[in-house]
Image (tube, rainbow, N blue to C red; front, top):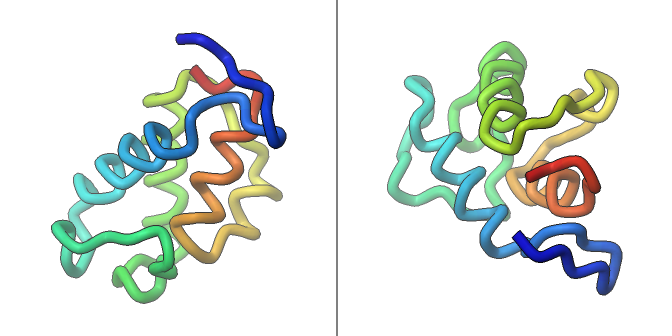
Length: 92
């Protein structure tokens, strides 16, 4: 994967979003997996903090890096997670 360092992104935000939405859609407690958008909050998707923890572990596995718990606790929308991963140098 070629790295593009423009605007602070270490990976393509669009491709990252697609992979993250796929991880979220596979979770058992998502209300409507077919209609996940970047603007949805995790609460809108029917996810509680434990579900978010499980999703963050799935994202860590998908991108082969670890996220700090403090950072994960601040995510409220799907876009927050996408931005964090897209700007992380270690995400693959």
